[in-house]
Length: 405
Ligand SMILES: *Cc1c(COP(=O)(O)O)cnc(C)c1O
Image (cartoon, rainbow, N blue to C red; front, top):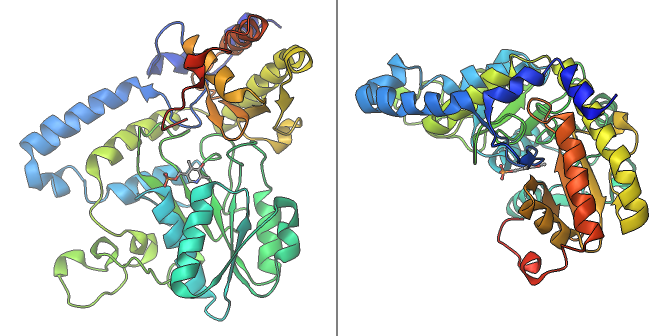
């Protein structure tokens, strides 16, 4: 089938109009910042003008601001195979990594090792290292293929990202969790590139803790609140270290001593960011209208089409596939290594195909089935082909490095 025929047969095609995307743009960076849902602007305007402007402080109760972290967490739970009372929307992914790691450590007080992979997303490793320095623990960041060799009864907690940010390689959630549990270790899963991108079933995998991003596949907007999952069975025993008043059993009793709230609420810290949560909820509400199995099927078809169309460029222009070739082993992104990756990425952005670059040499393209069309994939590769044939990337302006790549 041609890309146009695939689009005509696509059961998710109608979702594209629910996003603001200008004509001509091919946006392949929804894995870094999801596109803006049309409904989000209205939702934010209403939250600002009516709830804040008119309702003022009464909106904490009247507009349910105070329960937003749990309400939105309950919606995210449906996307990650969790129960509604196991997830909250709060803070950033980095902060939630700290909260989940310290909660897991509180359940394994006689163990001193936090284990992760060296090539994990940097903030995961940095958070682990900072915590280990502060608490006098050992942070071990090892090569990805040696990870399981280091999993022994000294390990308190394993910190892993399910879908790798650079390569898109996907780990088996259930299998790795079982391996960790077999030596008595707990697992903190980072789902930043999985939630909304691939089907996730945390409870089926007997997962302990998980965190993830609100602004990538969940369309929550720049800097959206992240989420934290804690399995029901750990709620009572896991002790929050960031023991802020919103995680207290009775925040408005203003008790002199901390007592954790029951359930996942104990992992809240300070006052919820209401505007950010409103935008996140609009993104997730839209997402929940779609069927995750259909999203995954289209994601696989989009990435397969991209890889097929890229094959001639690999041969002629030196791109090397840096993602698994088997769709069962990758998330919703495809990466290529190229020595001039940065310049090529910039030249492609100048032609209105937005992907991103990850140092030292990776071009990364994310495929978001709710708005990416098969025709967009074909168009992106065509523009890339032209850039390579004409060496349009080889210009000084494409070598300028911005703060954010
Ligand atoms: C994007 C991403 C993060 C982001 O963390 P923030 O605290 O939101 O900046 C964390 N971990 C992974 C694996 C990511 O891909």
